[in-house]
Length: 264
Ligand code: F6R
Image (cartoon, rainbow, N blue to C red; front, top):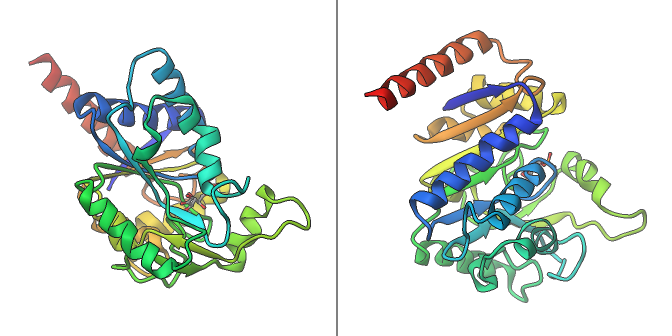
């Protein structure tokens, strides 16, 4: 794991946006894995601005979102398809047919999960996957106890996740308890992964992910197995890490090495 600790949530978004812009500059037809939730919003704003200022193009890119509520169709304001349209896709030059999100309204959701896996393979696999982190350590909707090699499937949400996401629903609205999510195995197949976590409410999940054992109890700990996973944290999210000075030291060394290599 490459751990980057930055002063503020804005710096985290800027760091994440730079990774996506660099990825698209190096490979315009990249396959991007995307997430919803509060954490990526600032990063999406930066990508929209960069696209509108013609610093980056999504015209040849393809995207796959991590997850969708089961039982909400794409027009539902709380669906993740709606979220992605509002917060990213409607504002950039991506082709609508190149944006994939699990079909929460599928007549046969089990078949839809298998199809999603096939679509990712047919696109050549995900080059760069964006992740947020649940307070309980989930990634996508892979809740604690999820299989560490799981594939796209239907998952039941925990009471904690339902409570955390209740803020997006009006009182009295139907809030789904089921989702379709890429599995942990699906996520680990991405060539590169960047997980963003900000705020003190994520600090204990961050600690379990980085310093805890590899365990289904903290699905994000599976990222310990990935060879190119970058974890970008603000100070608050990093605040429970026991070895924080060591991670800062490694990052300083990395930066110094990069600088020397650039000067050669
Ligand atoms: C959403 C997703 C979830 C969120 C996580 C954190 O597509 O995959 O795992 O990333 O629940 O959500 P926020 O960013 O709202 O704290």
